[in-house]
Image (cartoon, rainbow, N blue to C red):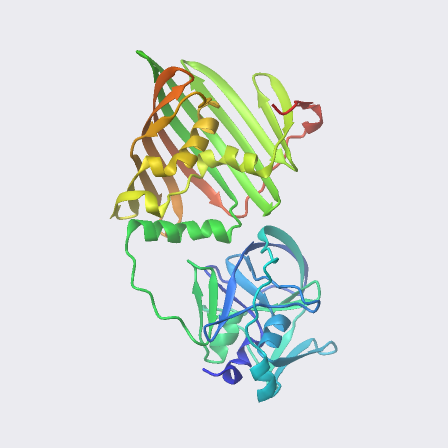
Length: 417
């Protein structure tokens, strides 16, 4: 399909996704949007969108719908865009064949770093009408419901799928690569019906949510030193919100039972500080984002494809046997954060196969993940055997909020060791 034919379509951009946006009344409101490095292809050619100042414009997702800016895409296609303030109309028209040939895919600068995370935008709905080549376009979603353009910071955003279907043009979404295809479509890949493929599809929701989630955790551990075994139970909740790649907020409320004794731990992280409430003490310590994320990975350990030895599917249950030695870094994090900061100094360790069970709901969304494994390690000069059984139940993926403790000013500052 020629760019000339595609031109009218992408005058207005956006939306693919799972949830259909509802009709919004005129006015201004705040919406939460997530960025996950979405890519745009026109006739299979990658297109980099640029704003008026030459900076890269990134697509975002809101309420399950992906949005792209009208003007940036229209200019990439060699279209003319005009705004009529008096009638609140967007008018899009083709320029000419020469302009069309000069427009096209750009390349991203090596210095460009995509923003990944969540932002709050103030957007305005103002009964905007869209015309393509002087013909008014009625914007509707897949269910036939009306959808409205909105304006944010002087930029107009429109639903791509609605515009494409109105013009009989094709738009598709590749969730695995976070890509939008307009016009020419990629060859369909061979169907992958493996357990890992279903797991990967389910975890796309994490990316769409900006990797924000709430989870309940329950774990059991048996730690054997010589002939003595110590049982440990861990339970609680963890929330993680990625406001941006450099602004991450965490909250954990965890109870640990060791030899019948209960201990509770509350952790809050924001702006480079980790606040800890444990054993009657309230402390704060400077911590980087990597350290904060490591503290939360107890509830979000990923399944690496190259570590899979066996896999199977039983209804909505996915089962994996993983090579533990290929997941040492993740298990290391699990131990150091979930088992009370075991010091793995003075010796190495061996990890047996990890048995992982993933349960999905009827919509294919992650419900819970269970991991069971055995480890033999050395702490200083002592041989230790650890068996661990952890279950994570995801109570919410995306749209998670965290309330900071009201008494943060009372936490005592500790020096980093």
